[in-house]
Image 1: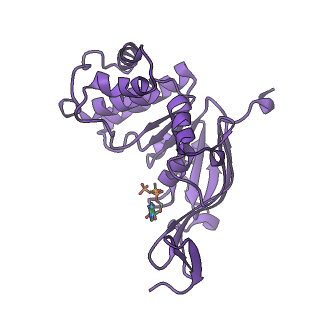
Image 2 (image 1 turned 90 degrees about the horizontal axis):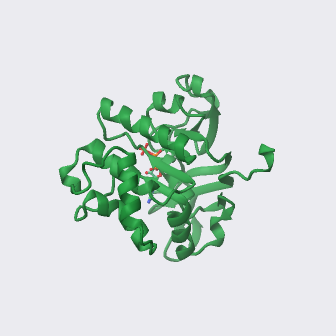
Length: 266
Ligand SMILES: Nc1ncnc2c1ncn2[C@@H]1O[C@H](COP(=O)(O)OP(=O)(O)OP(=O)(O)O)[C@@H](O)[C@H]1O
């Protein structure tokens, strides 16, 4: 039965390169993966291995250099920027390490904003309910500068979930928090995954956090390697030991002209 349920994320032969002055950075090279709805998946890997790039591709905030990303049955390559924005507004929530709250809005208005932009008349009511859900019912009127780091991250999580997305993408959601606060945010994310059925895809350097997920995918050398959560502390396989992206010396990409030529980097 499970086989017939389409995955919430499906990625085929995905590649991502960033053009640089005299070369380009090949970050992802032919990545294939499937993520089942409702699961908790950690994406780990060394700094610069492409974890954030992968989340940006899942959310449609970046376009791939090649390959295909299908989110909840929708091929992102077939959507224009308005279509991508609609998809995010309806089905995807995003949590960043640095919160990204609007400083001029209080907690309630920060969380209500995405629903108000979607024309929902119950925006503030829903925002209040979600802030209560993350334990912030006594902080509705506080502005971001009047909130602790952990509280700001809870507001950001409430904002990401207020429209009840099927998929929550979280980039280092505990990276800026002290140990105790980080643990309460981890618990909250798992609890919301359980209670709301939201698929949780999180980028993290925190291997203990990763070990508590259903699956761990490690990025190395532009490729994803599945690791059993119980073995997440084991060393990187020798075949995947290059942690930095590949700099392609032989091909120079000229973004303005949209052409390539062959040259060595300066
Ligand atoms: N806009 C860009 N232009 C050029 N190179 C970029 C751009 N964005 C990212 N990169 C490069 O792509 C590589 C992957 O970056 P990314 O942020 O995805 O890595 P990461 O695994 O999330 O790193 P970290 O754990 O340090 O946050 C890095 O080498 C980075 O320098």
